[in-house]
Image (tube, rainbow over all chains, first blue to last red; front, side, top):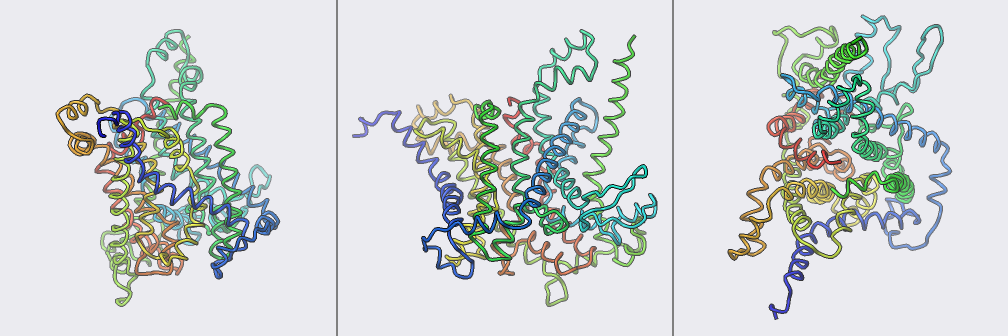
Length: 313
Length: 287
């Protein structure tokens, strides 16, 4: 019998055998639960009476609750501002840092290592130290602002929804807490963008830029016309990944503000449905809507071929 | 006539130095402040928040406070280190084991459905944790597994295995296939090839992957919060420390706890920074 089995078939069998534990775990922990989420979003399910899990009476009530909630649009706006702002700042800072560290100089590797620190430290520590730094009573940022820069009063960076800023005689209401959580997100994640862009930069052939320089292109022109087009692939990928991760981010906002002061993003609200209101169906409905947005973002990117070159790697 | 080239070069040169200085301060200062506050008495901080401490006032009281067990008037952080370590190491072993097999199959073997597997891993990588949390929360509540550490390991395994397979796959590609063919000709079977040829050669990539998984598991907060909250004896350090913030513990104690939580990860990171960076960005230069 063994003679009849071709090498090719044995290879296929070995491949399936080796990959099956991984596929199985992903199926059990990610795919099936997601399908179940879809079902739950149409069930009336509260955490107290979980026996309803097998009740198959389907209802649209969860979607009515979620879409009819008074602060829906506020949450959508907050989430979008948070994810777009965080993405742009994170990738922008990553790009600037990668360009600044592109060429060799003494101490470059040490700087690179230190730049990665915000990305590797635990989010709980990072949030705690930001909360302490920005504390209105003794936080050094506020003490410095009031004592040295002459602010009228301390700024509640993580507790004020709006802070009035007078600039050139005009007053602006700055959404200070939202801006602070965006800054935190950018600070925590720009190292990853930096790493990927730097890796790409170091893989670029030098002769194109050299030719442009000889032809009289200035540094900015060389960046605009020679370097930037070659970075567009990796930047597009990073923008997609960062948007998807920031959009679903729970930890940062929850640890910094608990979603107060105009920072209640969708992930925090899903958590509130699940834990504070014990409304599993509502959480599932909102989570499902959230996944739909992400799937659309992913599909748009896929359609325009940004990911094709990546998946071929 | 060199004007524009010279002006741009100079302006960009200055901007570059200013930006690097800003980035370095932004990355290092919070850590430095964390360390500084953790060794100062709270009174001194409140009186002079911006001042550098005098040598005489430095002490480790905040550390003693945060690690001591609640019976001794402390906050019991020490007892959570065992849980964090167990979860992190458990996740590393499970993930590396599975992803070595998966990555080997994905690089070396042809089998039906291979592309579907590769693409779906990429999708899992981006799947929202909070959405995944809802059904798992319900499921583990029903099974009575909420609060158990192995449940957490399974979740970390599922969420880190796609990236781990990706990292290892890139490395396996760089190992010449000829070595394995030669071993096969000499009579090794598939398992022996993996254990004797591939594993030793892939050690750097395995180390990088382990480090990545360890960090994710050690730092994780959302699932620990959802699953362990009611079981204080099973809390991880991240969860324990975040809970302290809720009961208005003094800032110096919080910073001492943060230092203890951060130290293992930062130490590991600086020990193996090169490996990790190469592992994570392998393949990125082609993008």
